Length: 453
Image 1 (cartoon, rainbow, N blue to C red):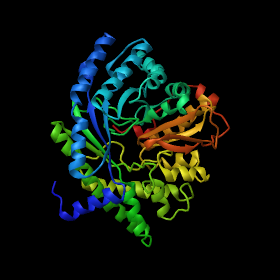
Image 2 (image 1 turned 60 degrees about the vertical axis):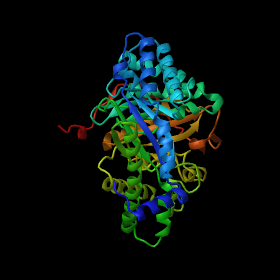
Image 3 (image 1 turned 180 degrees about the vertical axis):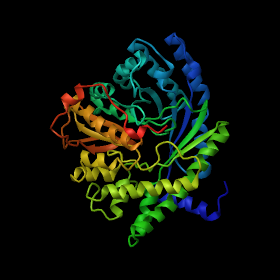
Image 4 (image 1 turned 90 degrees about the horizontal axis):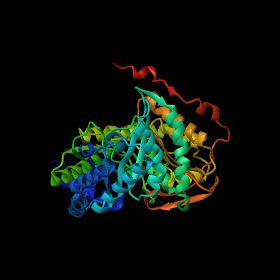
């Protein structure tokens, strides 16, 4: 890559004044050669594989931070979904596997490890079922391990038995971590159409179509986009889209440079750039603020979904021009507690669960870091999941739910987690129930648009 002096100066400005950073450099590691019928041997194998493969990741990333003057916020690992490479009958075995993953992540110094996961869009194996049952205890007993379950795809439909089970799982996880306002639920996500190369948590895993090792990078940049939107308040929406597109081009170029440099120095293949705008609780680093700078009084007002659609599309177009290796989720994240503008909108009553659900039809993922009352019934949580997952299945896109029923909290309470997880108001949930619908179970068939062959 060749960079002009002007591009270098722009990058320095973005980094120093506009909150630009590379949100994550994620090393994907295949564990397919670690399988064993003996759980202890399997755990020994995965510990050795992870600690050997990732021993220089953090050191190398920090060196590049210093050289380029660009912060890499998180250094992460993603591994093959554990349910694919292990098939054990005891929950205790999976809990010990999670502890082993956590110990390996701590040893190499990464922030998080993703891949305590199962793919059950068409049904369960015995190991899938056991792993899912172990999730509350496994996540509660680890610090760095993240978990995900893919319950649906456009080709397979929605496994409603899994959706029902996961509503109960989330409540158990909330209870297991009740002393920390149910923070364990922030490390668990339910997917439709999960992708194999996602570098972001909590849903990262290393797909079976990926190479042995690979570096994937997730960029950020809401502050950079917000700055240019504020500077062009007099422009029409078509012109504004073009301005955002050109800004996304610059952000993506820098992100790919960082990712490729890390990969080259580690001697590992470079994978993809995830173009998602990833907010933080810091002032000026908010996707909601971008939408309001476009002309909305408050995020959640009429017009919010259209504004978010413009933003997401422009980011994707600009990123696609900057790199041939777009992957992951790519678009705009709207995690409520992690975005100060989203939190304000929720506190003001402008942003509701129903409006968030509508917005997720045009952005990267779905209902993310949404805090709801701790006494929300399991079937209601399952129904919220089903609604969001249906959007992904029908629209052939990835959607997800990361919902936190904060134990002992009620609507209007404030829950604070600190760091990137931020804080938020507990959002009210529709009081009418879908219990009988969820208890039917079975599988919602794949839509006709899934018949593409």
